[in-house]
Image (cartoon, rainbow, N blue to C red; front, side, top):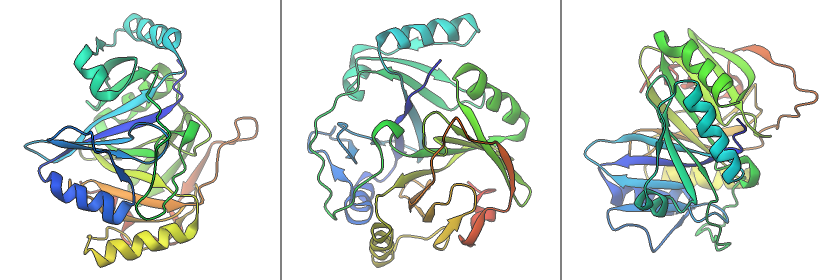
Length: 291
């Protein structure tokens, strides 16, 4: 299977108005006016949307969309998964309309995280940031997702992403007692990362911007808005990203960064890293062990 990118994510929220303010005032993304009345569609580029916020009784992660290049690749992926014993449910017409895609199939990874395979996303070329932000997306997808995975399911989940979904290991990093496996499916250093932990949860999602000053201005806006900071500003040792982590209204953290290096499949060497950062990101080790 050849997953092209992580094209979108869905987040559950008990306070959608707080998300509206956070997305517009802090993240600098565009809010679609035609989103469902009980939720939000957040736009960061030419795709119709990249992050969906759904009104729910509990906060948390809902799903991630794995983009495939075309209908044939989609059908081949379904057949591969079914032959391997993975339960697959095709999306109905209402779900396809909600996701703005031509086809969709729902699966779960071994830890229970919902994944949606899809093809033929809707493109509309109308992105305008309220704060001049420009996001690094395109063929690398919306950004990345990091899951904490219960230790008992960690190895099985890692094997699932590599052997079933075709992700490749970028590297491993040790943050205190926590091992993290970074996985890529395109040039982005990692689209998915799995951290061995005491339970399963989405730890954070990431948005990357084109210029370093866009990170600084977002940090100013976040502090002005009183957004809880999860880490200080810092630079990662493995992917070189300069970023900070903050808490979203749903309790999931969001990393906002710039400058990540990209994977060259011809020259890349998988390695083990000890310690997470060149400087800064104070609080990251405890963050890797929390929900």
